[in-house]
Image 1 (tube, rainbow, N blue to C red):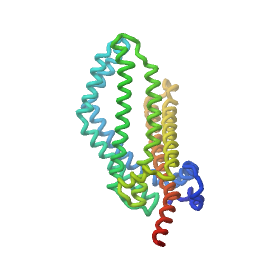
Image 2 (image 1 turned 45 degrees about the vertical axis):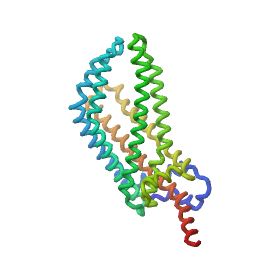
Image 3 (image 1 turned 120 degrees about the vertical axis):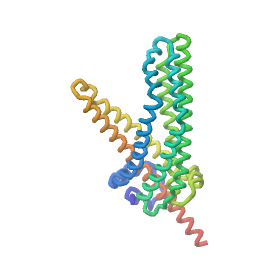
Image 4 (image 1 turned 180 degrees about the vertical axis):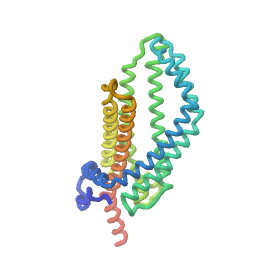
Length: 319
């Protein structure tokens, strides 16, 4: 069990401890057990392999003609004639809507695989954890629904800004406001990402309560919303995880661009292998960070809430 990072603090659970105070220790303990990251990689990559195969088939059959039309008419944005491009974009939208069933099946596959994978990781972290596939599936489904709602709001806002700052000026033969639009997209996306990371700790704590306290999905989510003394610490850890994932993405982009100054003397095969290696590094590092977050949430709950629950049970028995 990963208990080294918190063993020195369990006797002092009543003293204030920051959420990230033992975060590095948890990272080290997870690093010493590569089977945890391997299990996380296995179920995540199995899903993405299925998605990649389905997306390749879907791209060739449905989207390729519309995307070619968009690329062929991209010059229209500079000539103040966006009708052909908008027609192609509407074609892509209608193609996506007509294949909505594929997206639903992908979401369902993610819900089932993530429930199984997170349950197995939690059981390996704490061998006393109980399997709760149905409850974890319900929690994962609700998380996917909330995430899709957030993405839908983001897309609606971006399309509204595109209509106001790009399409409308083009239709009036005015200069589109590309720079303010780009600034709004960047700031708005980062702000929405921070809000999601601050609020989504509920969906990370609820699986821990399912397998630890053997509660249903609804009761686990309700107790996670209350948070208690852990709320601030869990939000802090989630924000740190979000910042770490952004840093990993930036590093991956930097590493991907490193060979570009030497592209004239490097072969395309080398560049392709380099980009594949960088992508694999990012995927493995991201999966490792996911396991660290799960371990940190589990150990914080064991440090703060489990002793309190044990004391309450002892008092009830004594009375």
